[in-house]
Structure formats: C-alpha cells, structure tokens
Image (cartoon, rainbow, N blue to C red):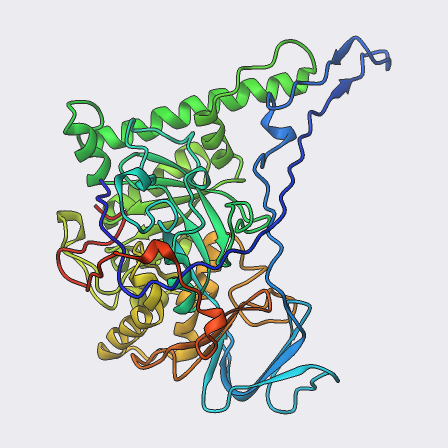
Length: 495
C-alpha cells in the first residue's frame, strides 16, 4: 500500500502557461446490408454520445501545443544520442521542434539558425521517467491531495490517473531541472488492477490535457505480490495470499473476455440494444486487444514468470515489469518475451519481496540480447537524479567485470523508457524526425557533479539554469520541509 510523504527539497516552481482546450465527441453509426444487398433491415440507429467507447476512445484529448521554439543547432558538445552513438564535438540540428540532423563537426547547419555552444559539455536526449506519481501525490503533501491510490477494491481498472493529476505540482519543475522531459503518471499499487496511467510532456500547464502526450498509449497499472494481498487481507477479504492474487487476475480477465465478446457481437450484428458500458471491463478489454499496455508492479522473479504465464493464458502482452528487483534472475526470459524491466539501483530491503536485490540488476538485464533495461524513480526526489541512479547501475556492472559503454547505458533513461511507454518512434533518442527533447549537461551525465544546464521539450526551452526567467517560483513550495534519502523515505508507490 502506498504511504504518502512530503516531497523533497529544492522543488522548482511552476510557471503558468495558458493553453486553449477543445474536445470533440463522435457518436458513429453503422449499417449492415441484408442478404439481398439492400440496407435497412439491420440498420442501427446512431448511439448517444458515450455509449460506445470505440467511437471516442480518448474522451479527454490532449491539447498539448508545446513551448515557443526556434530553429537552432547545438554544437561542440559530446553527444550521447541514446541509440548507441557517442559523437565528440557533435552537432544536433533542431528544425520546427524536431531533430533534423545529428553528426560530427562537419554536419551542415542551415543559414539563419541560432547556434548554442556546448563545448566541454554533454548533450543527450531528454530523460523519461516511466514510473512517477507527480501530480497525483503532489506537494504540498496533504490528505486532500493524496489522489493516487483508489484503494477501495482489488480491481479498480475503471479509474484513470489523469483524472487525479494536478498539473501545478511543483515537482514537475524539479524533475525538469533534472532533465526529465516525459513522465508516465501511474496510480498506486494497492490493487491487482490499479487503473490507467497517463504519459505527459513535462511543460508548465494549468490543465492535464495541456500536458498529455498526444497519441501515447494508455497503460494499465497492475500489481503483484505483497501490496494487494496485504491491503485486502488486512480487511479480511480476498486477495489475502499469492494464490488469491492470481485468482483475482484470472477472474477479471474472464469477465473482460465476456464483455468484449458481447460488444463484438453487437457491432457485428448491427442491431439490438448495445451492452451496458462497464469502465472496469473496458480497460481490461483494451489490454486484450493490445491498445492498452500492461505496466506491472512486480518484484520477485517467480511472480514475473507466473504473470507471463497468465498473459499467455488470456492472450495479452506485458509491456514492462516495474521495480523488478529480481529481474536479474529471469533476464533471459524477459528478453525472449520482449518485456522491459523498469528498475531502481539502490532502493531495496523495505519489505520482504524487496530483499534479494543487486545493484547491477540493470546491467545484468541489459546484457541479454534484445533486452530492455530501464531506470525509473517512483519518487519525487529520485526523479530529479535519474542520471545518477543510472550511473550507479553502470558502476555496479563494471565492478563485476561487465564492459558497458556510456553510450549504451544512457539508453536506460532515454530510449528504453520510451520503448516501455510505446513512444520510441517519437522520442527517447536524438535521431532525425524525432521530437527535439534534449538536455545539455554541465559535465558527463554519469558524474555526480553533472547538472542539467538547459532542457528542451519539442525544441522549446523548458529550463535554463543560467536564466532566472526559466526558473519560476511557486507559492505551493512555501513551508514545505525537505527530506534527504534515508531508510525511512521509501519510494512513492512502492509499499
């Protein structure tokens, strides 16, 4: 069960960017020809808005417009492009908010482009945090804003984290100062099915829709292990055990299969009264058809293997195991199944299922061909230093004799997280055509001394350490105490 604590020190403030919003609603209609070729015998009347989810799969659409931007080129820095290249004295050309070219000093820069000098510094893609509770467990950390865990039933697949997200959480600015340009905001892990997560662009906004990543797939937060069995066993209800957890998953997928079959039949027949919408079954049915990705909180290797068997039983795919402290034990299995392991380096030991950790977890997972190793935060403070968490994992791998390059390890916080979120075609690496999410670091990002000097989101300057205009302050930070890392400060959502 996720316990709330106050956010950490040094939270940068939130600048208000007014964005217009509009929403459209479609009702849809269909006709099925009669056997003689005529129409009308099975004509279905248009449904009232909201009765068929297929006509409007995203009723809370993104209104993201991005920050003001210009065309420019970053020159002279050491580029780690996230896709495996390290380029000394590199050039990154940005055109209309997209990466236009990446190369060495001979790369052509179009006339009229502004030049950003990065000599002696490093340039990387923006960091992507795949497991965050910013906005749903914001600072100030008061009970009235503790909106991240609908701990009322083992199955709350019907809830959506975006409906709890408070975009003025100063933690977003603090994360941006650490180079984070994209985050997945998840509900907590008290339940077998915690609800849908949402992927957001890390820019100031007064609405959730203004941050929402256009076109990013939804993820369903699921949780293995101690959390659901402890929460509901403590209430003398199921699940109270691991076998209760598995029975709960299976029952929910059976119900979703039946629900999907009824809707498929109604759509195929083209007549009659449609089934009643059920938001819980609708989300799980989205997992079954592949439109919603499974983001599965799961610590133990044996439970990951059982969840993979469950996915085969019901014909769905697991996108990522989060926390995944024992991923190193089943690294070949995860690679074969194409499942990302989203991990910490130093968080462990705060409950039984978190005991058997190794700091080289990410490195050992990454060593498998076809693997997807990810470093995540689950914490309002750690999200500000994901580069350091990746550096610790890299150092741990090297200590046990693994030859891991920095240009590969940077993918643990850039391209691989994008894969975990289903957005690797748009961001996560500095490659032509992708969104210009870029960080200029003061030093090697795997150094504890490195700081993000400038952060660009879609080519718009979102943070500039040297310019106070891009370091706004927030009244919501007033009176907020700071916390250092200690054994008492267990990561958010991990209990």
